[in-house]
Length: 234
Image 1 (cartoon, rainbow, N blue to C red):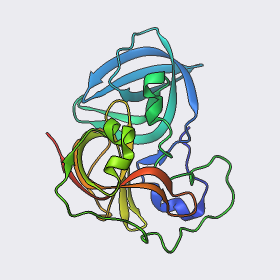
Image 2 (image 1 turned 180 degrees about the vertical axis):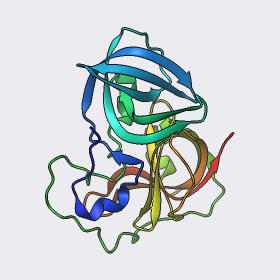
Image 3 (image 1 turned 90 degrees about the horizontal axis):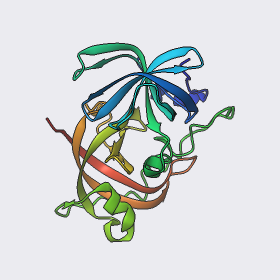
Image 4 (image 1 turned 30 degrees about the vertical axis):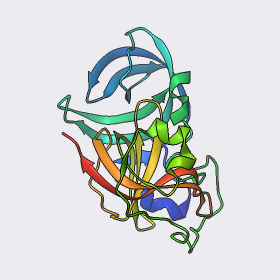
């Protein structure tokens, strides 16, 4: 079943074709597998519930039992590389130690997405205060390197390449995009609230790294990119 957010003020996060998931684990048996576009698509059986999931490209075998953790459910998702439309598909993380560093990037909006949360949350009206944007020449760097040396890249313009893991348009006047390099993930804010990037796109993004940011009400990040400018790579 597709899980939708219960927080009324976050209804803008939910599109007609996807809903944020809640990091729930699924212990599944692999029935079918296909690699395409940097992803491994797997048809799985979870106690009789058959569905498709997509994880970052990983060698897995039919008949193998694995644990995957929810990220985003998509409805009527068309994979261009497979030329196939899925009625529903779960974009998930494989529960392996080498992927855990990308597991807890605050979903996509800090701690705002919480299971069984009933209180109404209102974004901090000072949401954009304290944002630092650099106009310096961007430094080409890998996401993992930023995490290893966050003080070095603090308030610096960077240029990174990665796969789009999550997208949320029209949130506080921004688009929020989670970028993944196979090991680590980072969120970039774009001031274009209609940014045209999609899950599984390979992108180049240029933006400024801000560190130890607390926008209030759960929008809290150790590392986040701001003023992101995205280019979809072929």
